[in-house]
Image 1 (cartoon, rainbow, N blue to C red):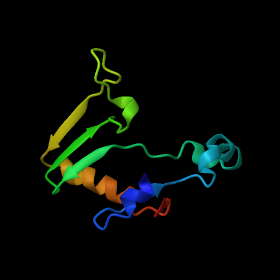
Image 2 (tube, one colour):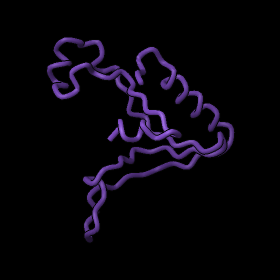
Image 3 (tube, rainbow, N blue to C red):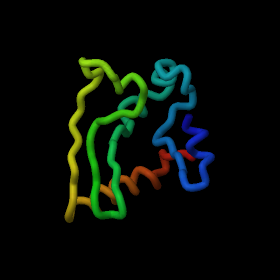
Length: 102
């Protein structure tokens, strides 16, 4: 799925601190303990440097339900004002980090 997104001319996908053995993540931990806790799971959506949405929301079938009982519940924060450039700068630090790979 990530490769398909990355193939779009207006989208660039990068992985922060990816494990070499993606299918064997637990095995990868054994060979690289330093990276075990050096992960990034931030979720921020910033538009035109003016508005950001922060939260824990994931995108995947397992997170959405159509029945009476929701499968997942989450909260998001809408941020505007002086904090938005800080959110954007934090994203840029990860995006341009040495641990980020295309």
